[in-house]
Amino acid sequence: MSFAELQLSEPLLQAIEAQGYKQPSPIQEQAIPGILAGRDMLAAAQTGTGKTGAFTLPLLQRLAAGEPVRSNSVRALILTPTRELAAQVGASAVLYGRELSLRTEVAYGGVRINPQMMKLRKGADILVATPGRLMDLYRQNAVKFDQLEALVLDEADRMLDLGFLADIRKILDLLPEKRQNLLFSATLSDDIRALGRGFMSDPLEVNVSPKVIAAATVQHGLFPVDKKRKGEMLSHLIRTKAWSQALVFVKTKKGCDRLVQELYADGIRCTAIHGDRSQAMRNRALEDFKSGKIGILVATDVAARGLDIEDLPLVVNIDLPRSPEDYIHRIGRTGRAGSKGRAVSLVSHDEVVELRAIERLMKKRITRDNINGFDPEHDVPVSPDPTAKLKKVTKPKKPKRSKSPAGKAGSKVKAKGKGKAGKSSGDSATSGSRPGQRPPPPRAGRTAPPSKGGTE
Ligand code: AMP
Image (cartoon, rainbow, N blue to C red; front, top):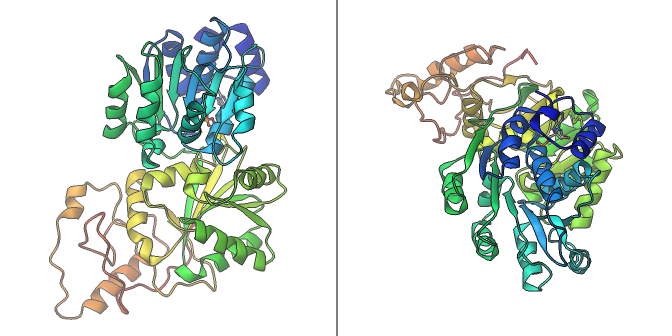
């Protein structure tokens, strides 16, 4: 199908052509006709699928056909969970709407509110905003919703994760009842559906990712390593594998700063984005990374959500994320729009539960490799077959530990650790533990020696 067949107007087709898009992505193909027809929509699509175009293109077309915006008014409100995503969606709306005379404004916290208030005086056909700053603007009478025609909740799952539900409810109460509602989310969980049911009328449901699915274009790998040596290993990998551009994820803000210091001490230029850094610093870090001035960007999940970095070749996980879905979101920063990408995780033995959850969600084992000189004290046990039915795994076997537990379990793991990580199908040193349950701490004799000769 072509964009023209989606009944998009000539100015939008020209803007699309200027972007070099050959054809609509699946989410665009499915969502655009319904939105053009004015329907409410509940859409499941992860970032990297072209979802921003899926809602901005038809919104722009509808807005272009309506009344001009009045002072301080907003005609379409797009709410996003993070500042970076707001900036990015705003930039896309400007790009796609370049042949139209519509005003797009972006408003987020962490920067002065006055310039945003000044800009809103002329009104905005599209306002992309984070919920907190939008409420501040409303309280200061800088924004009015009397002309509002459409509301979009972008990355709604993330908004709930970040505790924006109360703010969203307050905002919904301020909006005119008659409007078009669009909700985009990586997953349509029960919570998201409940949220949608609360304010949508007869929404069309569009689902290009029934479950969170990792892009097939991304190659996954992992290196078992001791927790305290992760920074050191990263430095080593950056040098020996000549990684020139990588987005590196760390679980905490402090961890982010620590890693940046460690890399700097090793002579590697890098920068960080996380919630404690000012917006100006975050913008600068992102610009330097995108322009190639700095090759390594260290980030927390919140700050990196929704980032769109063209042709990003590599995502590195220094810590595995708390939820497996976040792994998919993280690695969704690479391998975008059909290009090839790579995701590498440095995994310590205490992250085996997180690793299993990720492998189970992806229904495949991640290929392991070992780096000379970084053999971990405790290896990361190979997960049980991630495609096996849960029932099989949950049935606890009586542990046969009475005679010589160390020898038995140890030899079993050892056999699997020998470069066959991706192929073995049995259980590992944590045999008998339920998925989601933390395995017993590794004991001397129960852990395998580091596997050698991985295939990565
Ligand atoms: P998104 O999921 O909206 O963050 O978009 C991911 C990336 O895909 C962005 O870099 C877009 O510019 C790009 N993109 C969006 N639509 C298309 C399309 N139809 N063809 C090729 N690339 C696209």
